[in-house]
Length: 363
Image (cartoon, rainbow, N blue to C red):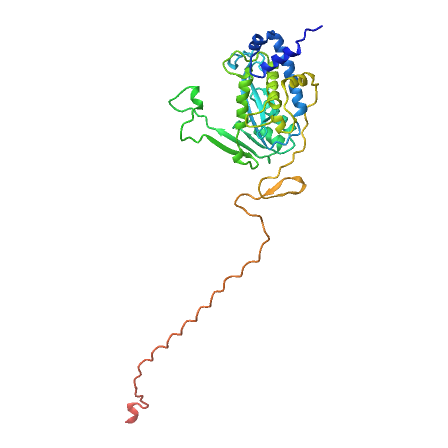
């Protein structure tokens, strides 16, 4: 008979893990061996991933932000030996995530390298869980453009918010990367596809989620010994964190959990409920892409036939109207005829005596 931890002890271990405690610290707090904690964390993390696939689908998220977060597994990237180590599971690992900005729900995530394959995997997963065309916002990473166009089409409103982290001359060092000089245009926004609303083009929600992940997931913290030693354990820890924040955590500026705000559940899950559901969740199928409905834009708009979208009036414009008859040209009064010039004055006449006979005839 296998030695199984009591339910109370497993609940203590899970409560410590979701609150940012490392494996060895959890061992000291609960008295459970670190190998047992590692196997339990991997089992519940994989169950959370299956639970997320069953619950989080058919979403109507209007604003979706995408970003990636750096971490590593077993050793730093500059310490990886290509001849001895598996390049796919050792070295730097990036956590790619997508968040619904209005509900704070983590729509999808992917753990992998910072390459085109990982970007494709994240965008495909996001597309499979949505039923409404969203406005997408990312940073300036160019790996997102190709999969977004392939999965959402080039008509999707997609914009980028780029932060100008430029090293200042005369001040070397990585600490100066985040010290922005005064007078510098720090944030720039640009349109990639469609017509995104640049007032809503921002990545603050996913960046705040990344900060929460580093705080509550010890494997993502820098300059510690809590980093993952196995890629499977690392992926399980990421899945546990995101599922816990979706179902159990109420953000400070909200009164419900992200899953409740997105219509996924109708109550706040307890840690006990999450543990029971994750361990009992069977293997299921990934969500399949559904047709996307195009939401009505704000302001005056008219639906196009066949559900192809909306024809909207841009700011400063007006709705087209029927052409009116051209106005007749203004009547210009006829010019008065010029006065005739007076006839020239007659030349002075002189009396001339005509001679009818010559002088020879008179003789």
